[in-house]
Length: 250
Image (cartoon, rainbow, N blue to C red; front, side, top):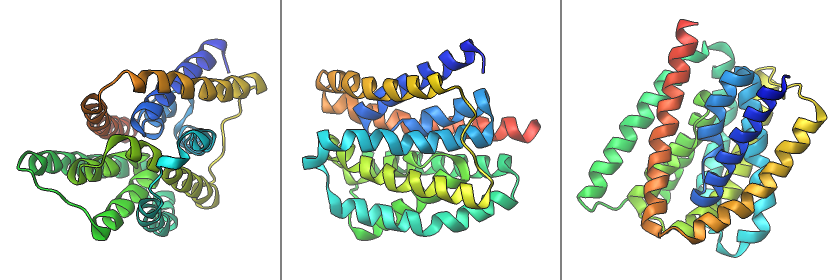
């Protein structure tokens, strides 16, 4: 791995991890599409899943008291339930069309959620959480984007920002670790072969991003963070769509 590529990867980790600390999501949606371009599809997704487990684990002690555990289970267990089957589908299907289908469905869901939010419709309850979990699990494995489904739920349920950011961290630990294991089992996934100093730099960058993200979060009003979460949903879906189109014509 060239020094330029390593620095690009580390810089990408820093940006995505800071955004995840501020908004609760970002590593999977922002890091994965660019990592796919930098180091390849399989290695990029596997590294995103690894970081999607590592950062929330490091963050848990700082946000433990704000976690809504009932939502973690009602969102996380349905996601986990569908992920092995989704990994099998991913292993036997060309990745380009899968990315495109997932991205289009996510974009439609985001547009619909915005329209419903404007007429003050609130969607809450266990059914909505289960559907969100299924969408997040499928999106994570099939298209590398589990966050937009949660964005739709956050918009429609008007989820308060700080409990949302805290609750999403154990959810990402659960989803990312199961996605990592599923791809390892079904899709011959593997972590990228990088020098030890790149791994060390990535871990240090994740730790630093937690403190940088907290400093940024304290200076942003809740409305701005909500807009950031929504923007991340659209960016993640568009990046997945771009990845799918690139793979389709490659």
